[in-house]
Length: 262
Length: 255
Image (cartoon, rainbow over all chains, first blue to last red; front, top):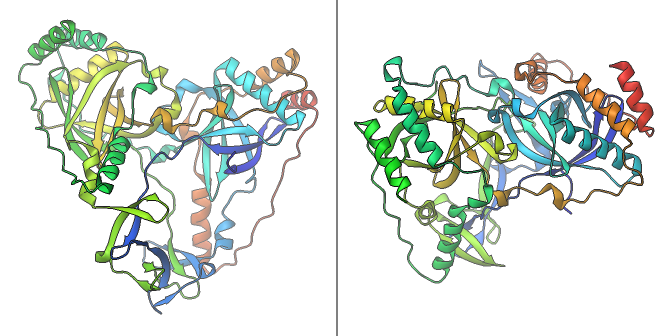
């Protein structure tokens, strides 16, 4: 079992459940290193003071903030830590909301939340919360501090465990009003919409995440294999960009005819 | 609105919808740069060859993948980019799913799609049809040399695009075992906890939450700039209640 990223407690009214947090995402990416070209020695990144041209040990690094009038404010880690909220080890549940009411635009990083240790009291309080959340289809909203950042988090039941997803703050979501959209003149005719809905329905399926695979990682693995055998890697051909069609209705009819004849 | 980050065309069937892609989110985290504590001088990251103990110039750096311990395969940026497949400006949507069936854990990032200069009628048609069919389109999109599965749905008057995580990137929560319990939560405990959940039920209103930490960080910056002394606060730790039923009762009474 990996080490938890965070441990603390989940508080719900006056009930406190000691919990640990694990990432809900695995790193499946292939990683590259920077190498010294002549002998493939992996290079290391070292920090240097630009003024003194000397290497700086980690303890002598501080955080610099540039103010609007170009003044540099230097904060040590201890000073920066004073900004962290007091209850750093607690996720206090503030409200319960409908899971479906949370727009996916807010979702950030998924985690798995588990009871800390195997004390019976902890395990029972965890199961109680899990059972109630699964039964009511509600998710808990709370705040917590992970590393140095405060997050708004959504906690819900998924596959018989509690999972936590950090949420973006509302001012981190841009308004849609400045996005260029069609004008009233572009409004489609009812028969066009019906035809397009027909096309969507002909192509309708259930959501099945197992049907998608990371073709990029797959191709990258093959490229690495080929290269290690001394093969040349060719750049793939570029596809021609599609052009907008002049007659939407004709395009829809032709598409539907093609799908139904499959 | 900032500039679009990608321009291309959605195709569904033989219909082509020219689009412009914009980031829907932006991080407001307060960013610092590394400085030398004693005088605030700029810190540079330099690449050092540990064998020679000397800095290596950028032109002498290559990218490598470690096949086995100490055995590297060297790849150029072009060779890595070849993994993206055909660098097409086409985003083909070839099936449609009920968006509410998708578990939130799959959503990665969101972008807004703006209508391109040509073909605004096609954009309006796709928007109207997705709304009416109550479905979201699924397709594949190559962005930054990387192919991703994306879900396209309506959001107010615009189309939103979500990049999705692959199933094998998600941890199955059931891979973690739960400790056994001697006694399952009782019917009474479930009833009381459910009442507590109902009592704390609210509409999801994201504007009700502010990033107080961000504001606290900026306040510390301001205090330091004004030459004030910065004192650490004391920690508060909650007590863990042993009697579940008594805690639930007290919580309900307090609610």
